[in-house]
View 1 (cartoon, rainbow, N blue to C red):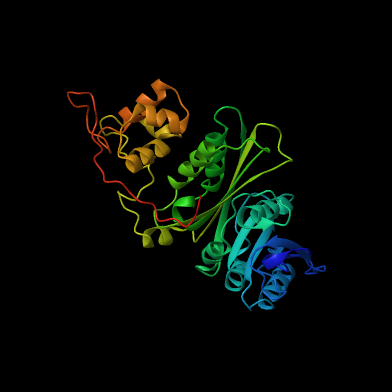
View 2: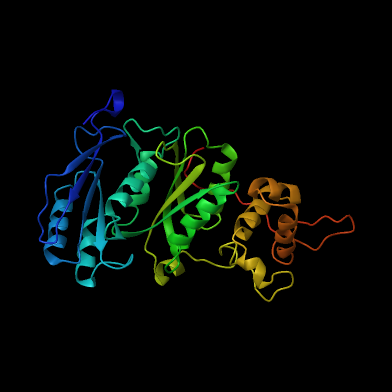
Length: 345
């Protein structure tokens, strides 16, 4: 391991477990986080935990690290991102702070993306990194939380919104998804020297429009030399229970509903085409935050054309906007909201 100054000695301990339960010597991955006397800050056990021997080994690994390290199980599955066999799922959830499932062949990629999203790797060009205390709070909020993840990649003029929307789509592909998460970690990467502040805000606004208002959000931003020129990536890791009971417990109501789901498709000015627009939620949140029904504001923040911005505002009539007055201006009908998230720009 390597490290300097106050970050010397911080590392992630990665255990690769086979189907027969065999675990090789763990890999020690140096990271920049407050050192804890040579002990890991995060322990990851990865393997095909639908097998009893592998699951038992994972539980043993978790039980050896009860002195403050956070523990994550990465379950390798055969066909699609689903939970491990119910026989072993309860054991994993009881032993680990969080459990994530990933298809075979993507395990290493997922671990790499997770680490660069929640931790600053030694030597990594990451000008803004997640605060480890915030990440610790998210992972430790409820034992056995499930993890939903999404990874978006795009190039071109609208690359930030396209990458964010793809990551959101993947994370939301099963059940309530981001809406039920108690914490979300967002990683933003672009090719060296090509990342801009407006693009960062664009991606974050889209994510914030999808999560519950009380969910904690952390963010890391950095450049990635391996990306092709002009590329933009967004990684989302959402931690929560992700079932109907949890969603009901959070008390989601009309005012808390996702922006792009809050409207009644049959209400005036809110046709189905508006609800299908992937930027509707972001535009709605922008109007509420700014308390302005401004076409140019929507254009500028979402990087869309005049006509598209007009249609988005028109679709909000009867939802959060009044009909145009004699001067042509609309009134915002809901008060501004101050998000209570933990990420720091």
